[in-house]
Structure formats: C-alpha cells, structure tokens
Length: 210
Image (cartoon, rainbow, N blue to C red; front, side, top):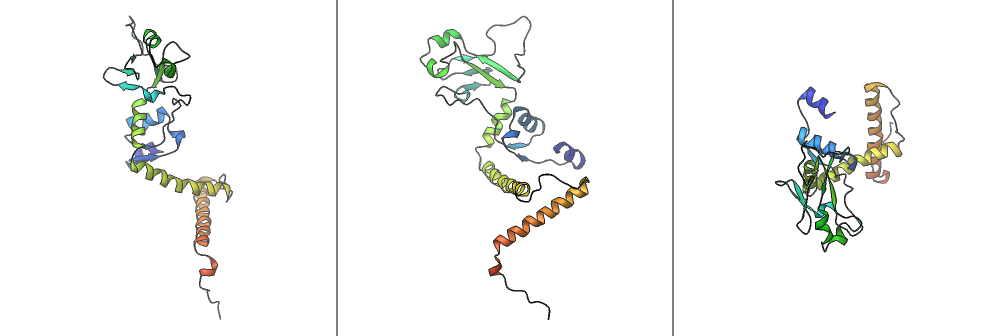
C-alpha cells in the first residue's frame, strides 16, 4: 500500500505504527533502509534470556572491527581464519553466527553465566540488525509512546467493530460496497459513543409536532 500511494501520489508517511508482527528484520530493513520511514514498531526479538545467563544485549557490538565483545572484553567473530574462497557466513535465517574462542571461554570466570552448557558462546546477528537498532532507539522516545497511545485508539474501534457489531467480514462486494459498509459501521459506533457520553436524562426533550 505504501508503494502504491507513493507511486500514484508521490507521498509517503514519515512514521509507521504497528504491532510486534511488523517488527521482523526484513520489514524493519525495508522501512528504514529502503523507504526511510521511522518505525514506531516493537522489535520482534527472541534473543533475551530469562534463565540468568547473558543475553545478546549484554554483548557490545564493535562496528569498526565487525565483531562482538563479551562482558570480559573477549571477541566473538564470524570467522577466526581466512578462507581461500571467501564466505558470506549468511544462514538461511538471514543471520551471521559470531563465535568466541573455546580457549577464552574455558578459563573465563563468567562462563557459568554465559555458556554453561556449551564450550563457547555463539550469537546470531540479523542482517537487518542496524534497522532493528533504529527501532529500539525510536522506542525510547516520547513520540513513540504517543504513537502507542494513538494506535490503541484505532485498534479498539476495529475490535469493537468485529466483536460487538459483528462485522467480522465485509458482505458487500466492490470498493463502493466496502465503503458503504464501513460508513454504516462508523455511524453506529458514533451513535453509541454519543449515547454513552450524553445520557437520555441529560438531554432536553424535543417537542413533538402540534
């Protein structure tokens, strides 16, 4: 839809609000890198651990060296020796695996909190991690918090439409039918909100015809 509007009218939004389902790496990469749209979207992230061991966020990314640094300052690299045929190291999940040296981990005093069940630590870095970092930075702003509030106002109307008014699907065909059906639904929602805001006891009686 964004592409169609930009192609037809030459405009595009400066920010996009969505739920976590839109916070995948490819989507964020498309928004940030291709469309230059600010993502007001939670990042889809399953790398955080809740077992007391270090999560990926506890490792510092060194952009210049292209490697991670563990809490003890040891490097994690995607390759530890040069190959005659250069490799991309990209997995099917669009990630690059960074590994520490086993010799560094064996004598590390923090091994029980880092990789207690493995000889060395591995971190899968998404190809879209830079865009994901942009989304994480946006999530700390006041504009993001306001966007979340604005989104809830819209989502509750759609939820009311589907669950209370029983408009789970459109029954009229074509764009005109869909427009008319949405218009009738909006009228019903507005009348309901007016009835809740202005009870019948507070309304002045309307005189009938003589």
